Image (tube, rainbow, N blue to C red; front, side, top):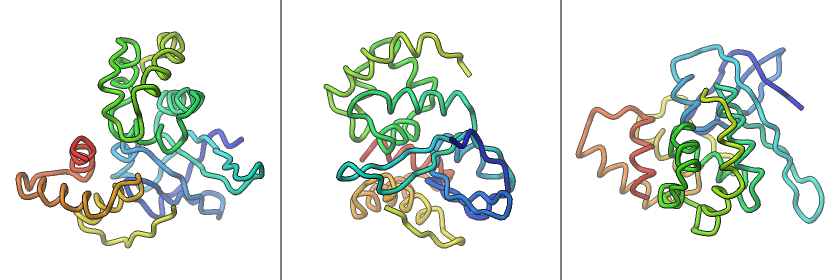
Length: 198
């Protein structure tokens, strides 16, 4: 198990980075919360969770997820322990809301907020609350797409939404609408607002 990686960021997008350490470049999938913390860094340390992908009862590959804070990694691993919640859905949750907002939604049994996340239906929301309420209460409060390095904000936001599983045409329409209404978005803010509308 890889507990954490420290090194130089050689590529960065809102959904994944390439982190070089010891002459090896690791592709690490990240949440929008982690992206917000590392977007201006050239070197960082990420707490990691290695996910083994199984197809037809055999190993088909591996995904490495990285988190700026250990508490976010802990929440991610609790979320994927719930039946029916995969790594992609857990990352979607952590890209839609801050970890503390998710914890509060679970503790206050706010099913509507959890259901507002893409990929979470009523049954999954109930299961997440039921299985994680006690565990979260004990926690401390703390398809490969290739992007070009010189992305515009629109392209970067669209790339992130496509990587999260959204339809390109729908995502593009929402981004254009948001940018025409407000020209002062950060990439993170634009993606988070788009997630609410898609």
